[in-house]
Image (cartoon, rainbow, N blue to C red; front, top):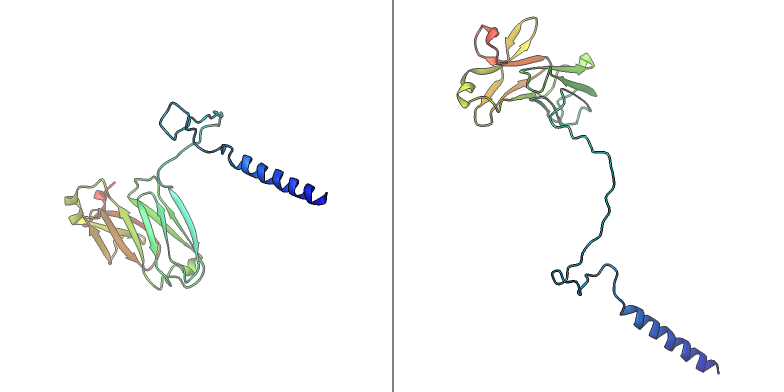
Length: 187
């Protein structure tokens, strides 16, 4: 009698597996749909989520903290500071600050003040995409040291449309034309 019950249970179990195995998968395509073969219609609901505010552009102030062995990039407005490995002597916080995203002047603040002497020069880049290529012949970068002084290691790149200065210290910098009359600084 036990044998009959065991075989009945096995038979019923096998039939159950077989019959449920042949049922339609709830996520399978509906092949009976009048739409394209293999396609099924999808039902969905709409939720009333508040619209997400999308703000473009680059921040006017950007701050980052670096360890001596770090490398990194900070951007504010049209200005980008590239920090190379081993540029710093100690953990340092660097802030780039511009008046607005199109400002031709940037303030590079290095704290603590004793860290404002880079072992490896950093690169300060001003992106000038809106300038005509012919304008790059006379562009350079100046730094403030009680008066505007022309930076020594500067290159203007008409193809990349930028001006790059290699700096040993952070300072307020601006891009302008190479001449003594700084009233003609590009604004």
